[in-house]
Image 1 (cartoon, helix red, strand yellow):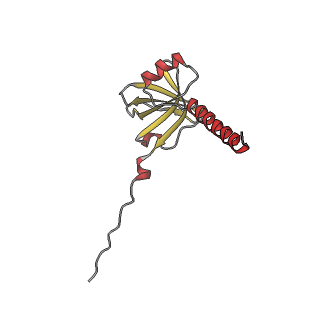
Image 2: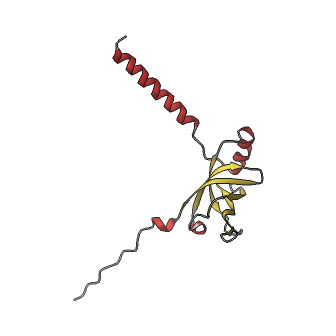
Image 3: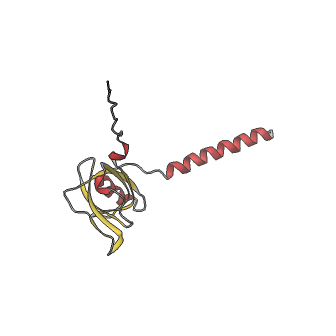
Length: 136
């Protein structure tokens, strides 16, 4: 074989290996019920859950007592509700968010969030347009 052919085979093999390794690290969006079920099969895997903050229930956070402990109740896309515990500081404007994505593991009666991704709708709204007045 020519050196060029060997190099192309090696490059192709590295490409296939990288795709396979990336596929193994992916997580998928699930509901709270699916996360509970999947946790029994693979307790070390993290899952994404798109949900909304249940604003009718209290948010437990006291920065003076423990700045790295946040508890709140979230409702997933299938309307299942679960307590979420986040062992990091509270994300800014959590109460104002429209939708949040929590990444973590189910722990039975609560979901242990490793990361919270929030999107505040006011950040993406257009600024009001001022109308010019005509003066005669």
